[in-house]
Amino acid sequence: MDDDLLVACLCAAWCDTCTAYRATLAAVAAARPGLRFAWIDIEDDADSLGDDALDIETFPTLMLLRGGQPLFHGPLLPQAATLTRLLDALAAHALAPAAASVPSAMAEAVWRLAPGRPLSANP
Image 1 (cartoon, rainbow, N blue to C red):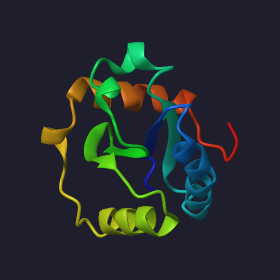
Image 2: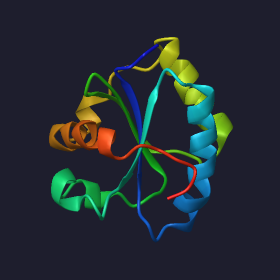
Image 3: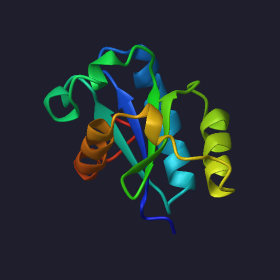
Image 4: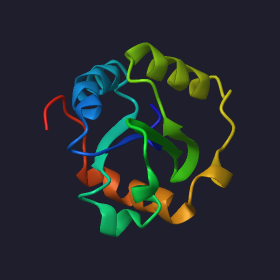
């Protein structure tokens, strides 16, 4: 079990792609019970996430954190196979830390918010 790995989907309530992706992400989460998944609305949580979150232009955007340290941050095709390949690469340690591309304050905020934003297939 990898309790310190978090897969956070950064989304917006108005985004139809995010809404459609939620069930897909929940299915991937169900298949990987050792990982933590969270659904974070960048507009609802804008005060906590800071200005960098509002710069996100492409959805869905994922942030993968291990122990609060960023491993991946960026848009991802909304397909289960794409996320599965990313998680498999992470498990194989093929993903290098992405700290330089993720604002540290935003990564810290996502890590802190995640327990209160669990993923479910429905909003």
